[in-house]
Length: 268
Image (cartoon, rainbow, N blue to C red; front, top):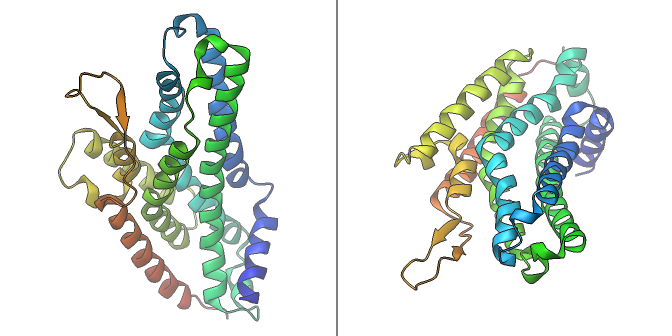
């Protein structure tokens, strides 16, 4: 455990000034800020909305962008950036010659990549709620104060986190296998586009394809209950759907495969 903690701290110090780290912080801030400015300028057109619909418009716009393309591509970038330092400096041999087990080093790197994804999604929750409540103060006519979605938004982003684990493991493995930037990024981009297409056309086996999981998560949130005479959407968050189980299974299997690849890396 001590070796794992030392390795994790080392990852933080090595990457805290890189784009991999700051992209996880700045992406949610910039995206939520842009939506805030847009809603602030268009508030006159949204004054007749009930509070629930105002929140759904605001949070939904962010979720639609994240689930369709930004989150998978961010994971592709994070997966590469965590291992790129060792590739560029050619320090794998030095790293594995330290008196720390390869499992600790590998697990710490993977956990740090997971931490960056978790940090990004947690900040999306905080900034969405923060900017939404700021709109409520600056533009009371938007009625954001009439509805609270803290718990719901947390569940949604937690499911997005679970849906991203399969992609994270695959991209982390690719970043171990390839030294250059183009191969893992290019493969990840192509697989992401394919995943978005499969999810959008409602292919019945899209849940078996990890790169479709974030999009499937977003698409599965809203259901209109028309039978009760209400046009208000019913929002349901079923955390453990079949695509989430596939994501978790892929994450575990690919993590194990990656570890055996690490074991074969020479330290001589």
